[in-house]
Length: 363
Image 1 (cartoon, rainbow, N blue to C red):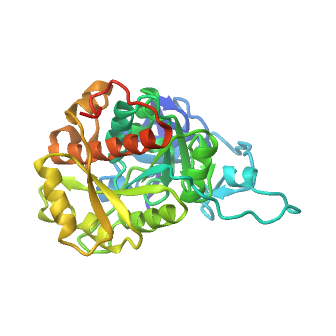
Image 2 (image 1 turned 90 degrees about the vertical axis):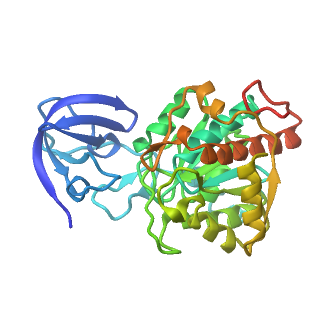
């Protein structure tokens, strides 16, 4: 099913890099300006209305497909790597990989060692905010990069969360990988996205798909399954990667209460040894017991931390996950804050730096 219709831009609500939010015939819409250019009031446009027609949670807005005032559009790109390949909207983004690769007459490169860089690999986009705030609170001088995979939204511009985290200084760099586009840097794969972060001086990386996670009740039917391959790959390359587990005290669905069945699947499929940070609370101890009760190569690592809800309050960040305020889910906040503390601990050991004054310092 696909639906298009024509309409007229009545109002421009907001603009930021790569994205405009507008009103088309009284209904909200957005335009990816890297693809269709900037819009002005009065422009006749073609909009894709499919997601709204289906009532999808990732919808709610029409997508501007083309500005009918234009007969052509040329936005020069930096290289020859295409993203959103083979769609009519494919764009030349270039990629860090092509600029860093050896020349045609140079010897082939060796497989790189990622040097123990801590990488928190999330299965939900909303988790990025708490982990980033916790890292900053634990080790204020850390430079943190966000690597976005292509398992959900392809345009990074769709993430209000990343825009807010960048504005508040909780993320220092964004890299869009695979078919995803719109980061400060582009990379061909998530692994080379981590390389790009290291090249730009990042101390730690948070990796996650963009907004728009999709899941079903099936054991393998959820986009977060990508975490398995990513964590194993990164640890195989010498990083210190951890899968960020999904824990909830408030999810109304039984299979996602406590440790989500999706996270349990991820933990049992990982082939290399890994660590799972847990908070020094009843929930943390329950998570540690869950780990001992399943077939996994992971081990629980308890981290010392203070009030996790203060992580978000200290930095003025409001996050919603699965349609609910994340701050109301104490179990989720504790688990995610433990991950950020773990990242800061790994950095402190590796660099000898001492943490900042935030709410997640060592006790």
